[in-house]
Image (cartoon, rainbow, N blue to C red; front, side, top):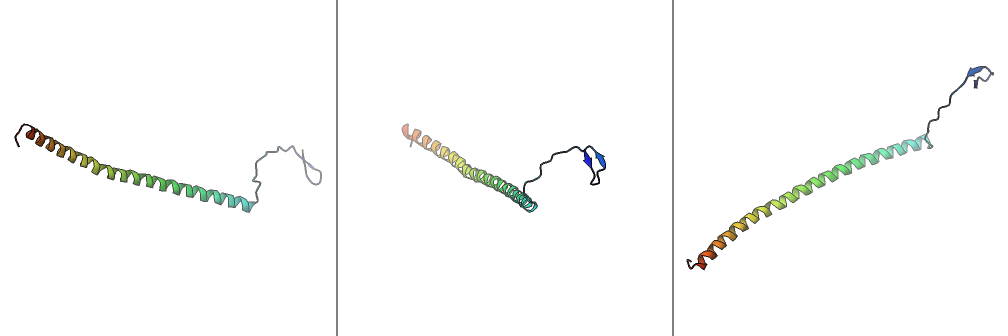
Length: 93
């Protein structure tokens, strides 16, 4: 029941509980600012990680391609050497 300071009856009040921050207003703002800075830094680090991963993939591809082409050249050289060996085997050269 709710009454005025003069004793006049106003009615029945229903209490609604809400969680209020236990911190002072200034501390609460500082915590929010810190959380905001941390979230921003986390986004920046995730972006940097993604860029590094892409660079690593690109670097790996650049390293693999010459090896693949070099392998083809070696196969061709090996085939020529085998042909020369066969000719020598049968006394043709």
